[in-house]
View 1: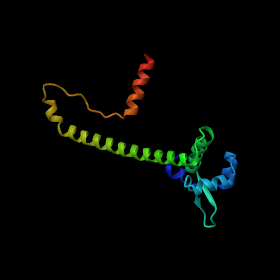
View 2: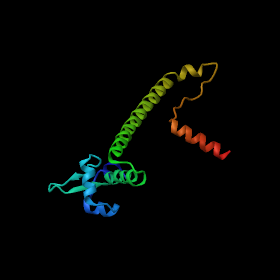
View 3: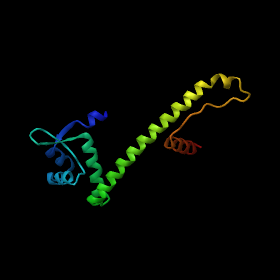
View 4: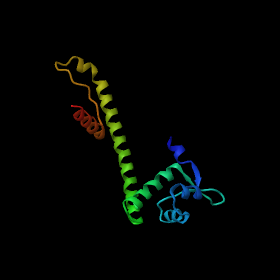
Length: 141
């Protein structure tokens, strides 16, 4: 599902409360606390998107399964958002570095062909991918 589709308001408060077996007042409380921000129709009816539903599932997991209070949930959600933003910055930086390496690599092709020692191709790998591939390789052995 695309990001735009996930943000599309679909579910009314009654449907969401039945889906998760919670009282509509609980959803209103989560909204007052700033944990959820459903969109509103012109008539002020709350409409929840798929993204809101996924966030609610996470909130309910934290509160029901882990016993986290609402202040803790708020802190966790903020840290989670900060981590997503940092991940995007890291990906941007990796893409920039990879583009710079490729530019320099392309400029230097002729010089490398004349070199006495051949240089291996340079490739940047994300830490998660490297760890996963190493773990997978070790498991297979």
